[in-house]
Image (cartoon, rainbow, N blue to C red):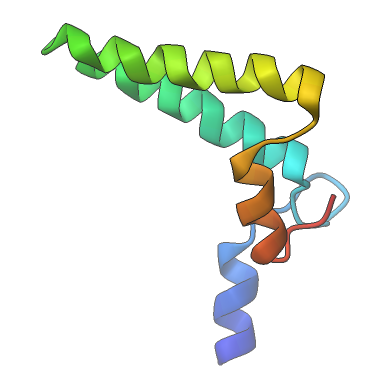
Length: 79
């Protein structure tokens, strides 16, 4: 039963393989931007979260270092 539960929580791509780090980063970053933009309609300070996500994506392109990748590696997500 436990193995069934774990496989149900892992998103799969077309090749029936678990998502890669790239796919998770796109999902998390895109979600954070959309959520913070929605919340900025209530309070404009949420735009700082949007700026933080954008700056983090920008700097990771040059440094190849991203805090989310460190977390994903610890969780065992494939590269």
